[in-house]
Amino acid sequence: MDRERETTLMKTLKEEFDLVSAQILARDKILKGVMIRSNRELKRLSDDRLLQEPAKYLANICVELDTKYDVGITLALNWMLDAYFEMEFERRVRKWLTEIYDALKASGATEKNSVELFKGLAFYVPHNEKMIFVHDWDGSSGYLVVVEKHPGNVYVRRIWNKLRRQYGFLNKLTLAHYRKKDFSQHYSDCRDKGHVFTTKMFGGVDHVIWDIGTPMSWFMAINSVWTELVNVEESSGLSNPKSVENHYRNKI
Image (cartoon, rainbow, N blue to C red; front, side, top):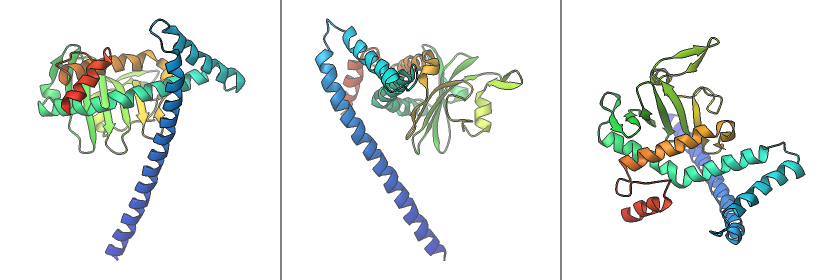
């Protein structure tokens, strides 16, 4: 009976895995088609002497969507910014998180033995199922990065050294608070306290337009951490995309 139940469970898991794999392939195929078409159009506009033209082109698309299809003012811009952050994250930043975590773990940089970087302390948090690390910690606040290995959801939240309440509700969470909750999220989206950035394998990036300065600041911060811990030779990252290309080219 146990063997039969195990066989049934394995069959179910395989069916679920095949379904998820098919969904990922279908999504990637659609995205590839979109990128081919958009690259073809933007190459006609991309000229060093006309840098503002592609920006106007994209802005016009947002305006047309908002007016012609009556989706609501700035909603198309919201979608575009979410898609932009998702592409930027998947192209470069996602792999940085693993490399940063591995570097911190290899150096034994735990909370009690953190490494000091340009903008504050960084350390990893041991966990059996998730990659977790803190960076830009200045003693009072910093960034908490939680990467779920399966299915690959990423949550970035601001944390503080003391729990604080506003109007009776917690509005500043600590590392200890997240540790007690096994680093799970409350809403798993921009409604979470201290929300900085969220991306889910099938849900994409979550409402960056609500506070666009926050995820942008984190992109720059994680770039600095990656540069200091991993891309030491180039000493630059998002600010110089060529350095990213050179880094991975030299590793091959």
